[in-house]
Structures are given as structure tokens and as C-alpha cells.
Amino acid sequence: MGIITVLWEKWTEFRRDFYKITVAAMISPLMYLIIFGMGIQTTSHGEPYLHFLIPGIVAMATMTGSFSAIAQNMSVQRLYEKALDQVMVSPTPLWQFILGQILGGSLRGLYAGGVILLLTFPIRTDLIFNGMSVLILFLNGMVFSTIALTLSFLAKSYTDAPRYTSYIIMPMSFLCNTFFSTDQMPNGFRQLISLLPLSQASGMVRSISNGEKPGSFGFVVLFLYLIVFGLISVLFIYKKKNL
Amino acid sequence: MIELKNLTKCFDGFTAVDHLSLSIESGEFFGLLGPNGAGKTTTISMISTVLLPTQGEILIDGKRLDRKASEQKRKLSVITQEYSMRQDMTMEEVMEYQGRLYFIPKKTIRQRTEALLEFAGLLEYRKRTVRHLSGGMKRKLMICRALLIEPEILLLDEPTAGMDALSRRQMWNLLRRLNRNHMTMILTTHYMEEAQALCGRVALINRGRLQKLDTPENLITELGAFAVDEFAGESLVSRYFHDREEAIRYLSGAGADAALRASTLEDVFVECAGRRLM
Image (cartoon, rainbow over all chains, first blue to last red; front, top):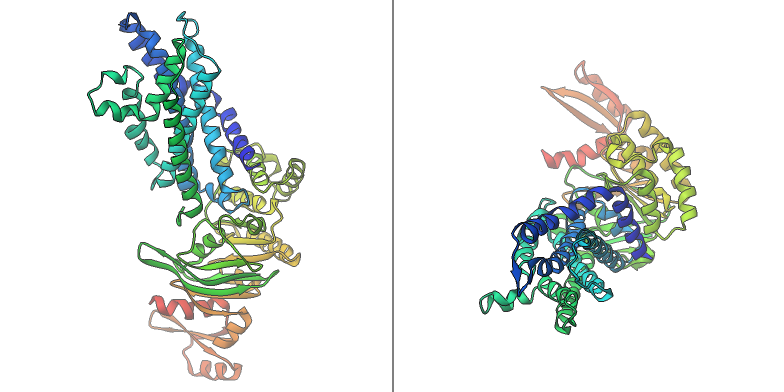
């Protein structure tokens, strides 16, 4: 029930800011597609670079869409508007609030990814996107919503949210299997980057788009992130003394 | 009944509330008074579970209150000092969100929202977003939101701050009416005349510690029901007397600018808190 309340809240937010959300979801991925995919026309493993780029950009869009839907919003609600107090004093079980935020954030990420897929649709790439791709993108969105939630509970000021984007989202966007394969990285660094959630999500979506089966290791990594950050979020909301 | 047992809250070595223990009966109108930084808002925040105590506990009807205690939290509603609302929601959405958080059926939410916004004179603005409301309208909306759930216990943290005199009187009447219907009220306020007019009992706290706890009448009687104000240099000094004749005798020997009046709760507050501040 509490989950539905949070999803309703997210829906009112989405309805109100529909154009802003849609434009924001499109701009950077579209720029990357135009510059790297169409402007600098290269090939990767004998294939047009766009074939490599599109799955990565879609995964990246779900990451940024989910993260920004939660990190900024929750920090402002907690520290500036104090609107989180309304939730804290209410009888809604707080774990349901957390789960609602994670699902709501993930849906926003999925929407952002969907917008990019729609935009790339006219480019005839023969890439495959199926139900499994949606599931992976949804899971990726859940992971980044959960990370955003944890960070927003740690934020000391509502201006911290843009900093988190600079520290986490920006480096991951460039390093995690979006623009180039992690296989090309030096030893040690490659293994580290491969363990980051976006590397796994991009890799799995790319495998599907090429007609291959995604490896189960990626699911394990994503679920691990989801469980760890989910538990931290729940722990914070129930136990943090000065929320 | 609400019981605060040995309630303590520390922030980075600073003790905001210091071993506060008191009981508030069901249906009571209780005032929590003290100077700025006394720990009033911190206490309210702990009762609303936004802050967790460093030590001690809060019981509602004998059951421990914490963030998991949905049954006890269902009885509580709070009007905070700050406007704690989503700024991008409309009035209607704020009310619906509140109703949903308390699992109130949608039809009931709609009916109560209309009645409350009508009562507060806000109905015609129900589609307006919170950020476009005046301070007074936001305050009224917070009251409507708190009352939507028909709570058993209403926590009021400076509810009339920033209100004009007329709105404040209307608010007093509303709070009295709600209290007559057995709603327990816990009020923090800077306005001593407000506490004296509304509260059956008041607790004076300073630096997080309980200084006095009694009815306003008893506290005034204890101080002295008669006050003589006179100037000592540039400072206004008040002297308190239990006996009217004694006060008149003192007045006759005092300067021409001295005046006799009835003591108020503000005198108790100033005597209790003010001396420590000086």
C-alpha cells in the first residue's frame, strides 16, 4: 500500500514535469550518439560503432534517469523542503517507502532508456532489444535508485546531489562499457571497472542486442549492489538518529 | 497517555534535551515553553520520530514509540514550525499524499479535503502549487493537512508563528474546539498569552532541562499573582507579590512611573528563563 502511495507521488511528479523530464533524458545521450556515433564515424570489430554505442547509451540513460530522479529529489525533500518529515511521522512502513522510491526511480530510468531507444529506432541497426533487455535495464535502474537513495540520506546539504553526479555518474558514464569495451583497459583497473553495475548492465544489454545470451555473472553483480545499498537505505531510514 | 522517560538528545556533544521526563494525559492541552534553543522543537521532533533520542524513550498508551511503531504513529499528526511540504505539489495533492500515507480511503480523503480547505478559506486555491502560496496560506494548509487524518494527538510546533492577530484568534478557537473533542494537544509557542489562554498545563524547559511543570494558574500563584513594574535606570524591573495589599504598599513607596498589574505566564517565563539568560 505504501509502495502505491510513493508510485502515485512519482506519477504526479512525472505528469507535472513531463516535458522537462523527457528533454533532460534525451539531451546528453543524444549528443553522445550524434558526436561519437554519427559525427566521428568509426567501426568496432568490423561493425559500425553505433552498433556498439546504442546499447551502452541506453543502459547509461537508465542509470542517469534513475539516479537523478531520486538523488536530487530526495535531498531537497529531506534537507530543504523537510517533506520527508511527513513520511517519517506517518504510519506508512518505511521499508515500503524505500521500495516505492526504488521502483519509481527505476521506472523513470526505464522511461529515459525507452526515449533513447525510440530516437534510435529510425537508424536501421538490426540490434535486438527484448523483454530480457527491459528486465536488465529495470534492474540497472533499481540499483542506481538505491545508490541515489543511500547518498541522499548521507547528504549534508541539498547541493550535494549534483556533486554525487560528478563523482559517480559522470565517471561511470565514460568508463563503464558505454563508449568502449572494458577489455581494453589495463589489468587491475579492468577488473575493478568490470565490477561496477553499469559495466555489467551495458555488457548484458549489448550481448542481447547482438543476439547472444547475457552471462549470469552480471545479474549476480547487479543483485548484490541492489541488496547491499537497499539494506543500507533501510538501515538509515529506521536507525539514523538525525534524519 | 504520552510518557517521555528520561528523554535525551545530543548533537555533536551539545545536549539539546537533557533527561526530560513528563506525562501528558489523553485529551490534555499541554504547553512546552522555553526560550530559543531550549529544546522544544527537538522534543517535538523526537515525538514525531524524525529524530531518535540519544537516550530514554517515548511511550504512547504504554507502547514504545519508534519509527516502526505504525500503530502509535497512526494516532499522531504534526504541524511543524517550518513549512514541511513538497513545494511542487498542489494543495489537493498535498492533502491526497497525506491521506494516502495514513491509508485513508480515496473518497474520504476527497470529502475531508474539501471540508477542511473550505473551512480554511483555501478551497478556491486548491489547484495552486505550494510554492505559489503566501506564508499564511501555507500555514493554514499545514493545519488542514494535519487535521485530515483526524489524529488523537496533535503536535503543534509554533503553529501561529507569523500569523496576524485575527488569524491567531481563529486558530485558538479551532484548537480549543478540537481539544474539547478529546484531541490531545502538545503545543510549543513563544507567545505566552497563547499558552496561558490554551494550555491546561505547561512545562517550562531551558537548555533541555525541565524547570517547572504545572498549570499556568499555579505557576503564576507560585510567583506572585500581583506584579509591580518600575524602572531601575533604563531597565524595567518587575516585583511580584502574593498579596494585593502588600503590592499596593510597595507601589506607594515606589517612583511615579511604577504600575501595579496582574502577573502573567510571561512573568513566570521571564523569571524562569530570563534570569538564566542574563
